[in-house]
Every structure is written in structure tokens, then in C-alpha cells.
Image (tube, helix red, strand yellow):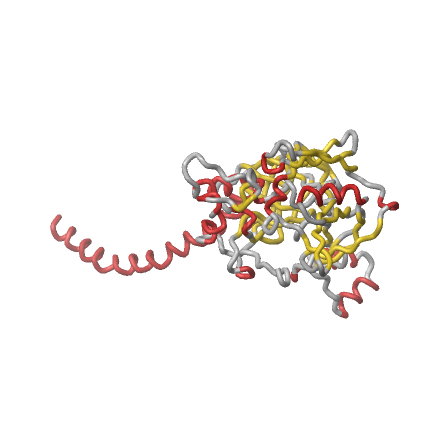
Length: 382
């Protein structure tokens, strides 16, 4: 009898098992996939991270100033990229960037907030006899300065030409004529295509005009597309550049043992520590700082050969440290809007709903929005 019972159940198992097996093979992978997609944003949001480093660049493209705290505004950190250097050419003036003028790394910057001054020290490629320094006001009196037009990445603004003595000092260091320009209260337009103002449709205009309190609601649902909202100074494409310490460690792992990548070569404003995996930030849409302010991480930062520069020599790097761009091109060309350039870091904007406030090393950071997919580079011609 025991044998008959065993045979009966064996027959049932053999008859039913293939159906259950096929069902399991079809359903379980989809279940796991959707579970991971559900949990991923949750994990991102619950991961408590901190600000580990803050950098300000008073004169664009010169060495970074590392600070413990900085006043954050919708236009960037106070004093960040307040000045720009331009090379005089036969056709006018040309922007000076580390990728094209690596000797800009030979200029160190020090801010004295108490006295309101910025001191620049020229290292002169290690030649002590040629090393020298210059001190300029952090906030010059723009009313006494001549207006000067600057166009950076097709986005123009009107700054102020600094007194000749300052430009002459830099010209002597570089060996050719340059001009130092102060930004003042001027701003440049952000040209990312998905951040341009949108003309409201007739229904939207009607709501804003005739329905009480509808204006603020319409502005909210229109999101990024707000007239005159997105402006920047002399920063390339956004007021802030945010990088992850975990991602930096991945870059260092591509270099010989004992060699670490210098984070300042990526020129971030904020470095965040505590991400559980490298390049997790590719999908961050928004982050909160101490639950008191929110920053919008709008675009990837696509990279150029400036990351290969040797900051000690002020020349193109040699060996593995001079091939960082190539190493990143193997698997970091993730932005279809700039398919030949690797990505490291995120261009970020201060949510204008929040007032100016101090951001400090050690501040808590949480992801408040995770994008469903990767953002697409859309700055025309760049």
C-alpha cells in the first residue's frame, strides 16, 4: 500500500512540476526586477551621507580654496567664480581653461574673509626666484570699473574690467597679455535645453490671470521651466558641481597601487561621503542638506582632458595619471547627449524656494528624489 501511495504522488509531482517550473522561471525574475526597482529609491533615500569637503574657486580655473563652510545661494557659493581670466588675442579675448592652459594650476588662492581679500600665489613651476603673490579685494567697487563683455560657452554677460595693475601681474606670470574681469552682480543664462522658460499655453495663462492662488500652483507644476529662474556666474554650466567620494575611490582604483586621484582635478564644490556604491549619483535628482535645503541635480558633468593635467608641473600629466580621461572613457560614457565624453559628478542648482544659508563640512545629506533614468546633456554646442 505504501508503494502505491508513493507511486501515485510521484506521478502527480512529475505531471505538475514542469508547469510550476515554467511559471517560476517566468514570474520570479520579473518579481525580483520589480522588487529591486521598488527598493532602490528607498535605499537611496535612507542612505545617510555627509558633506566631506567644500571648495570655492574665486578666480575661475585657478587652484581651489578648501573651506569648512560656505554661504550657499541660488547662484553658487559666495565668492565662487567671482573673477575670470581672459587671454588677449588678435581677434579679441579668449577664455582661459585648465584643459587649454594647464599652467593655470600654478596659481594658488587664499581667501581672508575677515579682511575681505584674495591672495594669489604664483608657484612658477617650482622656481623660487620667479614665485610671487598678489592681493586683490574679494568684492571690488564695481562703480569705479569699466564694463567688459564676457561670453562663456555661448552664454554672455557684462562684467567689470579690473584695474590694469592686476591684469599686468597675471600677464607677467603667463608671459602674454591677459585681463582679469570681475563678475559683480551680473549673471549668465543657463542654456540647458530642458531648463529654458516655456511660454504658458492659453489655459495656463487664463488660470494664472483669473483664478486666485493658481499662479503659484502653475509655477510649481511647470518645474524647471521658469522664466529668469536659472542664472549662473562664471561657473561653466551650473552654480554647483557635486562629486561622490565613493566614485573618486573607483577612479583611484584604476591607477597604480598607492596612487590616489586628486579630487580637485574634477573641480567640485561639494564632495559627498557615504554613498554605498560608486556612481550612485548618476541617478540622483535632488538631495536635501540637513532637511533644511534642497539642491536639484540637473545634469551630468561630462569630462575633458583637464583631469589629466599634472598640478605639480602645470603640464599635461604623464604615465597613468595622465591617462585618467582614457580610463574613464572605457565605461563612463553614459550620457547619450555627449556620447564621447565620460561622466564624473553632477551639475547642481540650489532650489530657489530656500534662502541663502551656510553649508558646512559634516552636514547630513539625503537623496530626496531618484530619477527613473539617466539625464541627457543638452547644452548647445558644448
